[in-house]
Length: 484
Image (cartoon, rainbow, N blue to C red; front, top):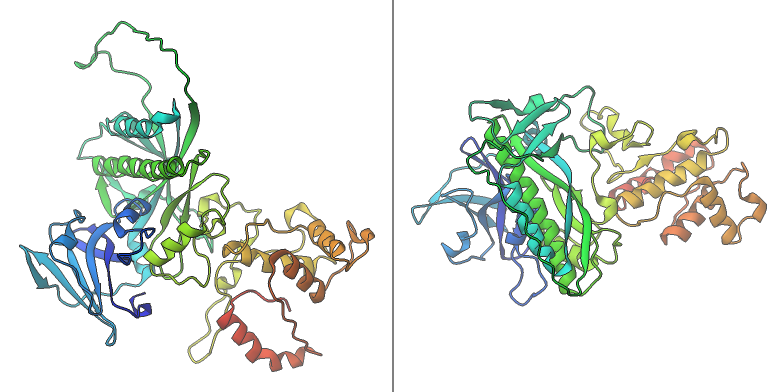
């Protein structure tokens, strides 16, 4: 990721501290001073899974910041990291800030992403919290909710292992993280593995407690106009953990994850209030851009469209050092978790199950996710005539899963209606079992997606070899599936 940078700038590092070892996972860039709409690296802390924290400072090329001011937002460690990256030589020099002095940290160990996630695991906690408040007090309602959560009135359940974690659990109770994830089958391609968790709220009070007091109810009646809000907050939060933890440590991590998610949702509410827009309950989506080492969570107002979030997404691209050539944080880019995947759904990226070729071969493949649509899926009998329809759905799914469109995958009837609407077919074509070919597939893709379709003609199967270079160039530069 650093090798893609080509100009002097500074930024912040995000990583995990575990067993006295710091694993740096990602970075965010500081914006130019004249950019008032930019996202600051510290603000991205709410978007990170719990336990992935600000851990250091990044100097790229000749850029630098005042030390120790650059370390002021870092509290994960007393000895934050400074990473200096030389643009021309593409070299990394790490330093630790120890007792107000920079000391060389030695040669860093480069770890492959797959090995990182063999060690660490995601915990995904989902719960619903009812909120009743006045519109003017909605931010205060979030603060009160976080305070109640931190008071020890909640517990957590891991359904895959049927394990409960309570605030009263002792330090001596040890939880092996891998035991919480009972894998019964292989991972599903194109999805994220995580440990599922839910939250329980204590609804009763211990009357024998010293803090228990009896109060007479007091009612205060004030007549005034106000706007009442009543909604359920759908919390969907992530934590990163490894090895074994005491029950109390894990409990603290999970409470922090819920509180952090609430702050992320609260920020979305605050932005809507500041913009004078109609309040929409935010929903949490998780994203994993290519070459980004971990998931990132974003709160979008429910019902919002990709066009509504365009400026925010552009700022996010700049902060995380992604170019603007393709969307990464549209709704269609959101990841799927393996236990949310239904067996009746089309497979994702099935070509990844094919064994890799030995060294010496040049391989060009689809870039990104796509869903493999085939005969007889969706409880629809198209055996013998639906081949091109399914190929079209497969190609269309790529555009949807890359975030280029929010449209649903077109059904056979949708495809037929599109061809009738553009004048290619008669009205009797709708509902028929007539074949379509590559020309009709191109018409539909151009009409629904506004893309340009190129058709290559090979008279026989043997002539396919003449198109290999064209296909290779397509996969290397565009990356969409093709229909043959």
